[in-house]
Length: 95
Image 1 (cartoon, rainbow, N blue to C red):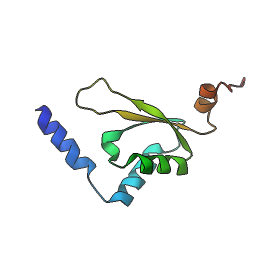
Image 2: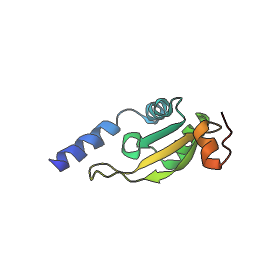
Image 3: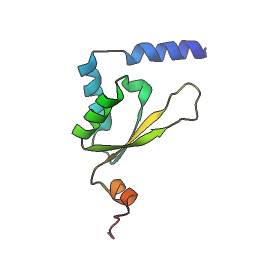
Image 4: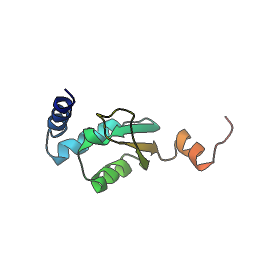
């Protein structure tokens, strides 16, 4: 059962060419201040992911492992200049 799930995920993430995957990642980043993107859903080289994130106004914080054995790590991104970024950098201003 687990092998079938892994094989199915692999087939789904390989949809489209690099441009289509870049657009999908850009939509995932959206307009939120904090975004968690599963690396298994992106299937792009890390340099490309960082370039797309920079274009979308996001800063890469790092990778986090999920608790589930069927999921790989996730990338954590924060909007540059957003509220979450200010708190992380220690620049929180009173509301």
